[in-house]
Image (spheres, helix red, strand yellow):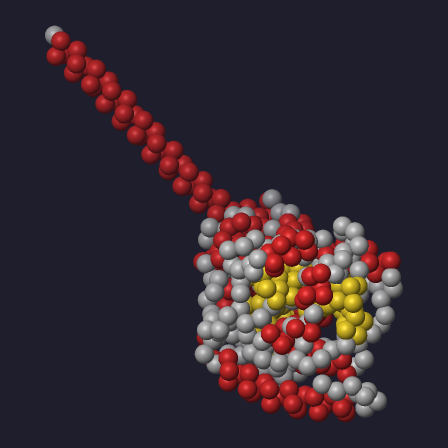
Amino acid sequence: MHLSKKCSVFKVVLSALLIVALLQLIYLSFLSRFHGKQQRYRYSELFGGSAAKKNAHPEKNTRKERLRYSLSSGGIFDNSGQYRVYKNLIKSDFTTNQKPGSHSNSDILTLATHTTINNLHHLESLLERWQNPLSVAIFAHGEDVKFATALVYALSFFCPQIQALVDFHLVCLSGETASFPEQDREHFAGLEDCTSVFSRLETHRDKYQNYAMSGNISYPNNLLRNVARGGTESSYILVIDIDMMPSADLHQQFLAMILRRAPAVDEVFVLPAFEIRHARKIPSTKAELVQLYQVGEVRPFYEELCPRCQAPTNYSQWVNSHVRETGTLDVAYTLNWVDPWEPFYIGPRTVPLYDENFKQYGFNRISQACELHVAGFRFSVLSSAFVVHRGFKIHGEFHAKKEEENKQNRILFRSFKEGLKTKYPSSTRRC
């Protein structure tokens, strides 16, 4: 009898376990179906379909139609005919809602940057720091043209801050065209929100080493800078690489400064450039940066590769210059350009464009700084603003053809300087 009771209890426990297991299977099956349905809905919401039409958000449908329209134009060729440019591939709400000729405080200064798809993941932290209008020019070729178009659309769809503030432009080779990513379901599998899109971009980070792109393709950095610059109507523009970070609150501090003092038409505002160890958090303020600078965790940009390229900034003077009061930006001192200085700066939209003949590595920024000098601009160094590059630039981390490209661009730079004599015949300045 005792054995019979034990058997009965065992059967009850076993039955209970089987019921629990069955319920778990039913639950997992439900979750799987729900997730699949959710994914199908997300896809249809992105690209149309019955589910999307029933629950359509007018502004998102408009965004989709604007993208279709941008792509249907086929883009325009650059001056060389080597590249196809889709300007304003996706416009931010800020740009879309802006009335022609009108200017708000937010539109005084725009940050312009450029990248390939493998560095686009930096946009998340850059926008988190900047929090104001941003213009991004992306270069893609081959299969990355489809991927770039798809992911940029997904970013503008899922990320509210990107929808609000970021304009995207796409540059590809002239023989390539971008198309609406309606059939590219593989690019959208698993995308549910902004975080998942950036996670997808993370899987493509560091695909190429610096400018070493597949297919022996040249990265048109100066064309991209000009495209990003041309994508904004702001009075002032800060052009930096996407893996650099400006100091916190720069936008509002700069606005307050130019309201206090009217900038001269021939003045650009230099932001001292630094680089920081990869493991370190990017400093927000000058006080934080100086602390890291004094212990060697932050150093002048390109200190190991080309110390002369940033030395004219006069880092010791800047580090020791007194900041009048917390949160107040001003000009610390003003400099004339000297060779081979290539500063990062905020400039009026009237400054000369970058020379698009320079591609890949070498002389692409110094050529423009040189032209600013010949054109009569002065360089005012800001008291507490700065930019920081993520990681130390060191020898051995560059692609194999770096020195060869540098040599070719040095020859091009000599020719460029001769051309400036013709372009500015009345200028006595040379570089």
